[in-house]
Image 1 (cartoon, rainbow, N blue to C red):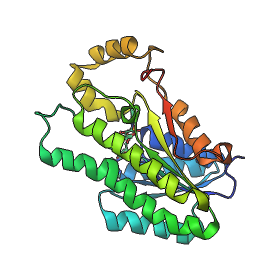
Image 2: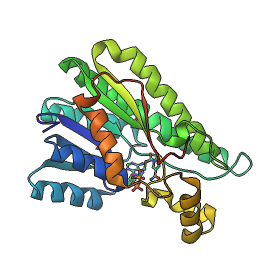
Image 3: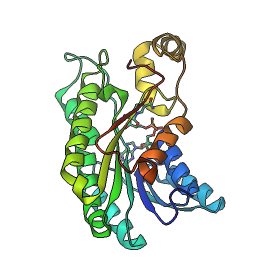
Image 4: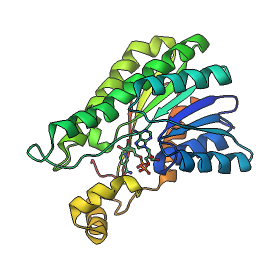
Length: 252
Ligand code: NAD
């Protein structure tokens, strides 16, 4: 198994891409700590994994709480004796162009899409340094490598977190701590509810997906989980500072 003996910490693990990545890592032998602010849901995901024979535990966590985020990561590393993988995944999408986005919503986007990843990565450094390396995966988006229409808060913060990931990769490469950004395109999860409204409903969203995405469809969470597994494991051992775009060709 690819991740036997490894310990992984995943935020936003109760649903969608975060859950799929956590499941994929657990099924490859990792002990996975699944963190999410939706406690009942994250407990269900962890329980289902344990019932399959995987090693998984759930914790309730809101990543906007710096102290709680730091403590959850430090405690997980302490409890399991190491931390090999951090997938810092939670993000928010505030729709709108410059005139439509309130300053408070821009601040909220920075707090979750950039700041929470900074805090999480900072907390993961000490245990990873002690054991001589690790893999930190930060979820950006293909909106981190291209420009959307009417999404100033999202596209700006997703570009920023990609820049931060590359900076951290350069700073810690010599210590064997790898930092890569996960950049999915459209994946059919509850995350796109706001965009669906912005587009004018489900039917319009589906028409948009079939015409705007060269492959003509949404990605599946399993297709993104394959990328997570690659970045988490030694299969990507010579890769750091990379933006792994998985988007059906949207940003070509
Ligand atoms: P999702 O809605 O299925 O899951 C998001 C999870 O995050 C939920 O379980 C939710 O409870 C949890 N969460 C939200 N805010 C939280 C907080 N403050 N603290 C802790 N947990 C919190 O969404 P998803 O699509 O699987 O993942 C969203 C992430 O993926 C975001 O970073 C987003 O930018 C990125 N992304 C998604 C898509 C897509 O099309 N779905 C595309 C590109 C990037």
